Image (tube, rainbow, N blue to C red; front, side, top):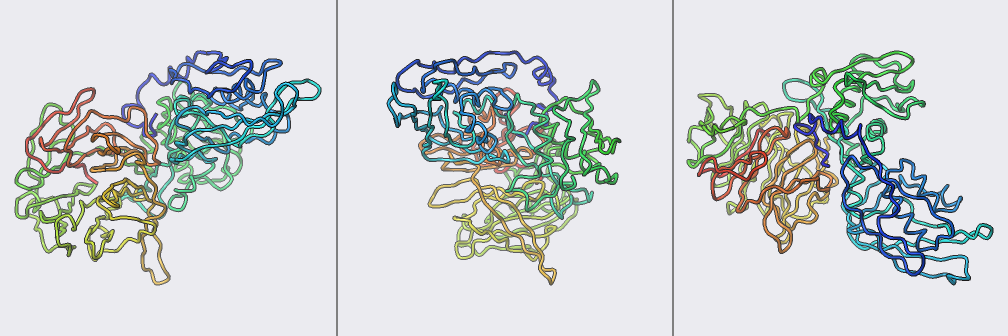
Length: 611
């Protein structure tokens, strides 16, 4: 389940039914448990329907070491909220020391085993197994996902109690381990929301909501898990560029074990006394964070009420929340833009339907004065930035009739078109971003409010040349397609802004991480949600494919999209209700729901939404 659940998913009533009608399945074992002999690998359970709940069985009397380890591993994949059944496979001391919440290690398949006998099976009182596999990902204590690779090898040691003669695990790795399919069945990706530090949306002055994707256990009080996670603060990667409106130390009231909305879809969240004395505006921001977070999880929350100190602090509806903070996925673009066969900027209604009529955009970029290679339209759709056909010069102008082109605000000295300017991109603050690919002076540049002089953005840790730039609507994250030795990868970085004692601003991209570890070529990318992107690329030896990816590097459910070849550009909106467009050798195409790509216009080189 992808973290970006806004749009059609968030308003589907079926999920509410799923939470209310969960069935029960007793899981005696995802794989058979042998009475004797070597331990086999734990096969990952096929993904279950969301209405099915899975519970593990406790150890039976006189179970051999192989069955104890097998049963423990299978108990890790159940819906036991506190892993109480899994702890029954451990000695008392090991059960007290084991911290399953510390991490989750995801393997390509269920963990395999190698016997590491440290005592005779029949006569000795200790035994060991080595768990093996190929790592795919790691979930840390903050519930943050990161792709992983390499071999996994950890030892599980067992002892036989001298009195009861029962085998139990007395030493094991911290955290939880499971196969990829079990992980997909047990966990779901959900965004929690904070506010970009020191930045506001252009025009409205609203704080910008920033998505922080985390993974929670899907059938273990996910709503309560998400509230606790939100209150605990942002993940370490995002923390330097966001703020939370919750006072330090704010937590759920000690007596809260579960959160459930009432029959009016209103959720009351009781908080501890740390939040008892907040003001109205701060309370509205707190409620907005909660509402954005929980609506990303379930359609059954339309209003949030906060309580602390024995009284209600505030209450906020969805409509009121959109007035408190700006969020990319709430903005529906008026138009889809593209460069037509005459190299002019054109547009058509983003709703499309059966109507593909288009017209030239008012102003200098649409009148054919300058042949264009690429364009970006500001999110308010009042300004646009265009790169000339040879890639050398960047122009910024308004999208009103009679506007002039003026002088270029930026020029590249690259000797070839491929070594000059990339496609520009705008954030919600009205700032313009672009990369110069000149091998003699490769740079990532920022033009505040679209005007020069350009500020060079620092990129510590960047290894390779930037081929494409896409800034998230929140202005806190940036997606870069980076070329190194002929291979292109999609990297997500954190945008940090600092100001020195003289008031001089410095901007840098920090902690770049891969969003497409399995791809060796990325040819097009677009943000397609608050933490989701759509990517055109291919694996080593594979064919070109169009798919969704998460900004943390995980792959959402239903990630694959209908195939398309020779893709030149991909156009998606953070609002998932807006249709998907692309350009290829066939021209301008769009993807209606539930069908394949359809050609709208036979000539179009680049398509894009505002941003």
